[in-house]
Image (cartoon, rainbow over all chains, first blue to last red; front, top):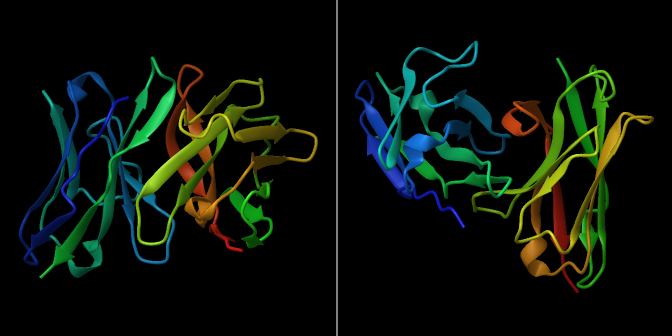
Length: 108
Length: 123
């Protein structure tokens, strides 16, 4: 089955740029979505279809997808961005929603 | 803004059957084209998709759970449910009901979540 691989953790200083990768075989052929989950809360989508942002999500959140890696980029990181981030795709052949293992973003 | 609320037992014994219901308010299952689904999360672990169902009868399940899972979408009650048989400690965790946008009759992004309900399986 298809697997999405994320690093367990990423650390960044406030005001800097965080990049969270999501690896998968030929992932560029999939639409990738990103969810943010803060402690004790349900996840929220921050980027969908590789690079679109839902209304209400700051422009600091952006996404890209090429080759075998999709990337969530958070510019000018703030303390409030500290959370777990999950990438997700829909595998149309297997009819399956697949999540990456999640990345904990720590703001130093 | 749609609201989703999970309901069901918080404690089960191994081999029992888990039954959860999600009540939908401020949206109509029969009047919308969304998928309605379930996701679970073991404490301190990642997200695991359980399955998603549509009012048309189209239902998709996680292959790893397919043999034990049933999702039912009840348009008459504006609810949907999850049944998971033969539970074990590995099934413990938070269970979220979700509303999924629909793209070409497949679940797209999850745009609404319930608050989650904690299920513990222990003898």
